[in-house]
Length: 336
Image 1 (tube, rainbow, N blue to C red):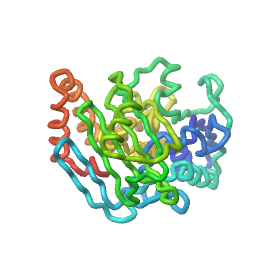
Image 2 (image 1 turned 90 degrees about the horizontal axis):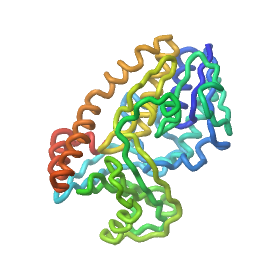
Image 3 (image 1 turned 45 degrees about the vertical axis):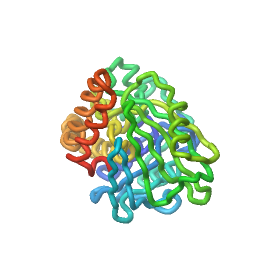
Image 4 (image 1 turned 135 degrees about the vertical axis):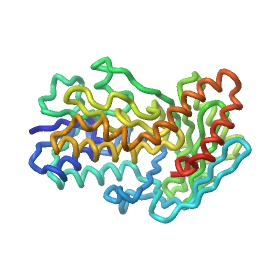
């Protein structure tokens, strides 16, 4: 049996390792479009925060993969202020590029073949018995198959060096009445870097770069911009999860949680589930296992997005009332 995996990000690599953990006899080939694993433009596509739950200690970052250990989550919604204290070694700010390299090394030790500079332009070039799409957002494979995409948001992020707002153990999130939020995450402590960005729960036509600059001015944040990135973000589950012999993982499958992102955690989890289903030759169980794992998150996230779309048309300020309601009901989801 052969499995082709498109994309050597967290979702693709966790799938590959999971397959080998459960059935080392399966041939697994990961196709990475860039010539370098991790250290490419997409290696830093997010704020680089990652939480490790009890059941996911196998994905715990080590060594150079860690920039900071987070002890405090500071969240502001309008006039309300929430602070969540976290135990050590649960939330990290990653050197995401190095963390992907860590995952790749673990996969290769298991016997996974990773082919770099290998962009898959069509399913027709793959001969695997099972195919895993970990190509990100938007999914190139879903586009090729004309499959429906889920809710999509937009992000824009700058990395500031010598930032005056650098706090090595604290992540800060400030929700905006326009239907999104700003984040300030500490990055490389040697450079006093922060990842500061804005994400919107939809594509409302805003100039995110300009909005971020206004936020920086209001917060009196200074520093030298040394990296800029932005793009689309999948909000919540991105059905279908399975099409014939193709499984969708990571951003192509489970997406990010609308409140707090958690794209890395969700990618690793979906990949582990997909790998187990493939190894046990039970890929038809994959959708139901994902729904079981993410039902609570999906109900809260999808309800929030749909309600927000209505509130925006009535009065954008109602967005704050909606957020505070969910924060009181399930604050732990905001501060993971």
